[in-house]
Length: 153
Length: 300
Image (cartoon, rainbow over all chains, first blue to last red; front, side, top):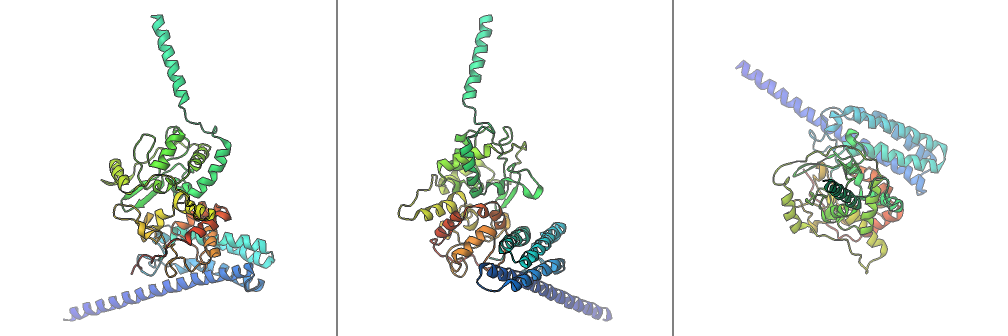
């Protein structure tokens, strides 16, 4: 009887822990997606400044700094077990973790490109910023998405 | 006796002369003007992506890149001008047959994973230019690997039947009722750029489903998703501005500054990002006339 109770309790605790973990994982994915949206929105702000449709140099610089800051946090946004194989809402492919060093290589590229982006924004030279904006998007964002992200169509 | 030897030598010599006559162009001897134009055809055709095993640092165009499909995994062949393992011994006519008719230098059917279903629409000139360009590339000695495909899809004979059912051979004919720009865009999308090979769903026999043209694919090549690029406003690109579509083709950015991945980043890097602005605009002009269709159902 006592053993049965213990087993039931243990099972209950186990289920609760699993449930919490699943919920935590979903929260991680949602937070990560929000982070990526912030990256996109920051890129957009810079583009608007480049096109002359909105914003100014100060806003563009602020956005570039935001991108540079987020770029450095990316490794912490991808804890083990939060890929699309574990959380259906996620678009992070399992290859993120199976080729973690390669993934980090791309992250470092974004850190480097966004650092140049900040410098270009501060310089006030729009042509320079335009070129660095394209490089950041292509190599920093697209370079990683190419291998590691599965977009939900 | 001596006479016979002399005759034999003469026969051997004339044989050499004859074989010299049918010798294909050697690397480096291609018409420079054609080769130069051919580089652009090469970019528009996105040949580099499938024929280079970038992930394992393979040499350019030496093949060996696996491409997973529902029928198995195909391994791309070597298209460098190496005479033994590449296409260095191919004649221009044989190369033309591969693109126009899906037939290799030995007369065997090519598997339609090589998109001759689209390349067949290319002009004779573009095919010749592309051939000239490939002949100028660095030859790489690398044996082709066998495809990892199970019966009956590994059987080239079945491809013959498949072609009867699904393959329409011949260059795209310009539509005189449409603008030059539109015709150029259609040529880039449907023939050289072979967009539909990924963006149009396939039937159970692997043929593109015409009435779902460019409507998007879930689990396309390498299991990647290819979005709807018809004019549907909800699930396609009907709500995008011309500038936004051009920007995607140029640097991979979407209107909300997400950046494309899933194979398209590679296409932007090797192909659409290196086209002229006029060609990108032509692609947009054509895509604007693609009938809107709803995209594939969302996966739950």
